[in-house]
Length: 251
Image (cartoon, rainbow, N blue to C red; front, side, top):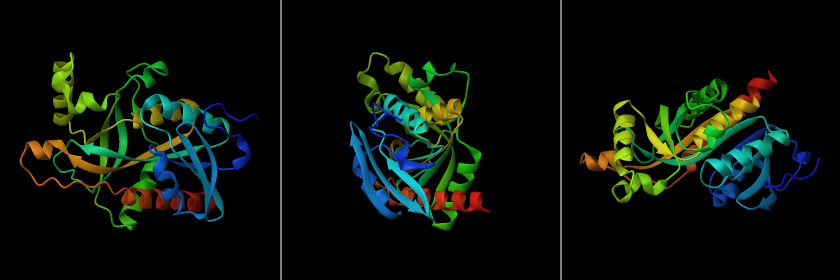
């Protein structure tokens, strides 16, 4: 196999499982939780390390920010043999019960982005794989996290969320945000929809766990609103979830 154009490597890694942070700076940190961690490749926004869980090769690869680079990464990883994906990322809370330092395990994603519209019609839901989601929940319990499961919003514009009033379509952004909140959406992030839809189309399995940085709705409501930039809770939970999946599949 030739090296994939964007991620920069072929199928020689032998990994069926991949943990996908957005930030290249988090890859080595995540790989340190694996056995025998080692650098594998770096190209564009895709920094890749390999390690092992119970003797099985596990990959950690960054996807960059947003749907297009996530979709490309998942497509090319699938071509090289990866079949199971867990996104480890960050989010901002929407539901008032979600606070900084919690973890959100996304069961589905609101497709308020553009990438997935070039895969399937907008009526098709972006949902996580049940096996991986269940493993993430079990892992969150085992690692003692404060966790939530539910729907997240996936967007393309970070500043459309945080500065809607200066956007020409600000009225639409604010109305939709209010709708997501009223419907019980837990949090907002930027990559889950692409991960879920592309994996669905390819026939792969995907899940998503997010560290909550803060919650702008709690701040608006005058509630306690801690900020937390530590991604370690989601990392530990994702690694434990893969351990659960690998052991279950060896039984």
